[in-house]
Length: 200
Image 1 (cartoon, helix red, strand yellow):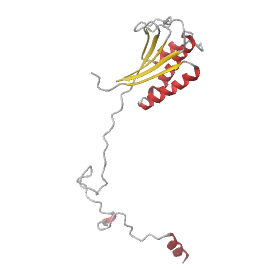
Image 2 (cartoon, rainbow, N blue to C red; image 1 turned 30 degrees about the vertical axis):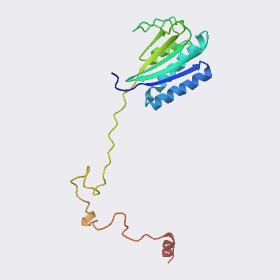
Image 3 (cartoon, one colour; image 1 turned 135 degrees about the horizontal axis):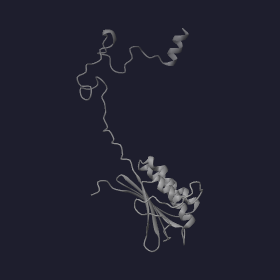
Image 4 (spheres, helix red, strand yellow; image 1 turned 90 degrees about the vertical axis):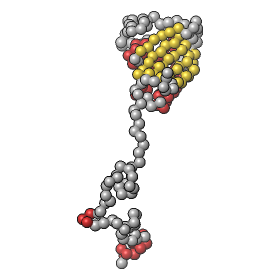
């Protein structure tokens, strides 16, 4: 039984360079809203790489669906495109073999980057008309929020965290008893009276 509902977002788009930046911002905004700021950089980088792969390689079109889902302590990011061809990489569970990837290449490193930033990743066929490339990131558990408490001002109540404390008796034996709170001990001069007093 799942004790917490999942959080889910789906975006359909054509993987064009201008749209990839928009999806990065959408993913970042959702993670921020879900209080997962620590995952924004890796998730946005992974989405960018997957969408760039769709833009460069997918056939017959560039239409795809980006899906992000938070379920308990795991964020899953996936991109579904309409190209059934599976990239020529070893994606067996536990395998870290991405073939000969040039570490200085400026392109073609999408899956190597996914591997580097994710906890796990994979590729699966989606019927006969596409595939899904996915990766997961561990989501930090939300910090336990402290219960809201209102603390009484000393001497203002007989309940709360200050029970048993005596009233403030004043400095050097003086007492504040009988002085209403907020009442000045000397009259406050209005600006006009203060100017005349200073002039005189």
